[in-house]
Amino acid sequence: MEEHLLNEFEEFGLTPNKRVLEKCIELLKKYEITPDTLVNHWIGYAATKLNDEAPSLENMILFEKDLSKELSAKTKVKSEPLSTSSKFSTRNNAGEVVVKYPADDAVINWTRSNETWEPDIQLHGTAETKLTTKYNYMFSRLRDKFDVLEEQINDLGDLVKRKLGIDDFDPNSVLKSETFHTIGRICCDATSGSRLNTSSLLLEGTRNTSSGQSVPLDVSQLREFSFFPGQVVAVEGSNPTGKKMVVTSVTTPPINPVLKTDVSIEGRGPLNVMVACGPFTLPDDLEFAPLVEFIQQVNALLPHLVIIMGPFVDVKNKKVECGDLDYTYQEQFDIVMKELQSKITNSVQVCIIPSWRDVHYRTVYPTPPFPQENKAPNVNFFSDPCVLNVNSIFIALTSTDILFHLSKEEIAVTPHGSDRLGRLVSHLFSQQSFYPLNPPSEEMSIDLEQAEDHCKLSFTPHLLFVPSDLRHFIKNVSGCVVVNMERAVKGFCGGTYSRLQITGEGSSVQIKAEIVRL
Picture 1 (cartoon, rainbow, N blue to C red):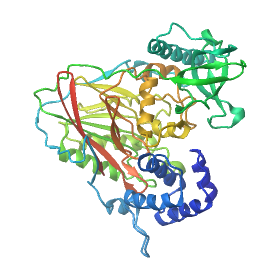
Picture 2 (picture 1 turned 120 degrees about the vertical axis):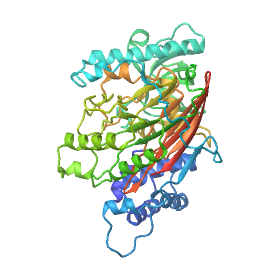
Picture 3 (picture 1 turned 90 degrees about the vertical axis):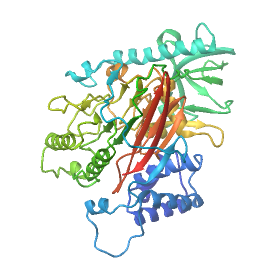
Picture 4 (picture 1 turned 180 degrees about the vertical axis):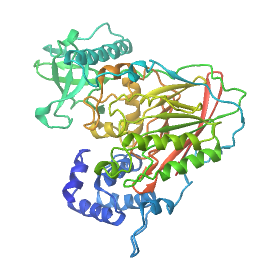
């Protein structure tokens, strides 16, 4: 157990001492959680409460109070063990509002003010036609993949040139003692370790500017920086030896402003939205009690729009892993969809987003929308990721945990007290991508050619939903309201979902939001 726990911490570049590990093992036994669950909670807690401090015994004592509240758990007593369904039904704090936006004292009336109005929901951007047709997943030539990455650097490089006011970039490996600008994407030198660090930083240049060559970066002169593999950046510095670039400044692509549109909900009352992300089962059952509970909340509040993101039949579910099912994967999913569509009130518009973790479906990213057959009139299927245009309010969605993946790979030196979670989100806007990490997380299978069309985030939306195993939050990042409501299930406990109220007049959009325990 200690080795497993240490490996989980090392995934984030952390090496806790023996006393901290002993405390962690105590918490694992006390709350009956796995090492990866504990470490994930710690990463989220440290990012939001401790400014990314390293784990210490003192911090772990404070962390336990937060963990206890988060899991709604008590010290284990001698009794008959509860079934998993009983554990969910006897959960504590269901309905508790854990986050409010824009202020803790915000008062929100969730009563639906207009019973008859239905929002107009359209997909924004590239049509999903290519995704829905049959194609060979990840069946791309190496040259084609290179061209996709090259185009990304060139497109973002043009924005950086305008930002810097320069005409062109210099080659990255040119022997030059004077300062110059060059462009490329961040890579990891595998000979210096498997993870990105200050000793393994490489900048891979473009074919046209640097003949595709990579140059090591010396960032010792930078007071602050933030890098991750796949990030496109321009660096300024010198290369006195022709072998290593001494960096004096780093420029990232500018973040585009929120799209200005004439919002068409004026005079119709506020637009009420509810959003939840799977899994919707406890780790070792397929009873879908959390999904039933969420549907009951939807029918009680009757929002105009509800967004439900997968996974539905989760590849990480223990019954799925061991093949202990009464139905095939597809049959299990069909049962869930039939129940979901029949139980949600017809006056509520429903958007369903898949996940690469849906074991019955295509485990590739971007993930195509579910087939449209046998869907109810008020139900819409969209891809992961996607941007929806809801009466000229732009809502970006992804069920993939990009924040957690970035948090494992990013290296950063930042001022004390800086907003790490906000910085992770800003990477998506700066890189204009739902998934800018390259190479991706080991659990991901990304089709680069499809991602070029369907994973771009070329403007800042009004709303961005990024459900993550990191701690829940609602915050304004570059004018966009970003919501991480976590998941509908956390371990054997109920998770959280979000509900939002949107008003607009002209090009102005106001958003109130809450994250609520399920």
